[in-house]
Image: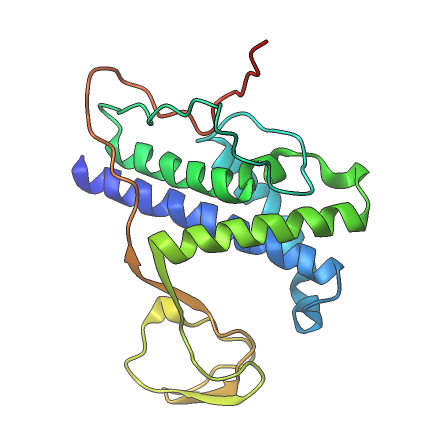
Length: 216
């Protein structure tokens, strides 16, 4: 059971991260920032809803699209996250998503229907999401590129490479080493520091983002 829980946590965390990356790439493509990824736009557009459904299975709620990060008011009480018993792995994943929501409004952005908003509004919101989520990743995940070379350069994949670290396009024949053009450097995680949840009474996942009520 412990091994299955760890696998579930890793899969869910990876899905959330991939969804954030795919969403960012789609926005960057629409704004013309990464023309080299244009051939993959259709694939990303198909993948994004599937990833969103997987993440939505763990999280609930949503919020209004904001063009800037809301200020943290001193008069707003922020209770500590509710400890969870029975779902430690899932609770850690939800707590990590809660950090992405708190710092970058990621869940607000993903759960919002942005089709009615103009490019300038989406661009402003994407910048806030990017800055906040990048800060969370830097603090809790040690993310490094699979290849250090610049994209577009010629690289060689030596024998004994890690299978899940490479995706080859084009005709593959024979045994490695393989030589080709680096289309994407890839990403790998060297270290994970998820928020730790202390088990107590109760059996529910922590709240992803608290409902904010301004008292009169």
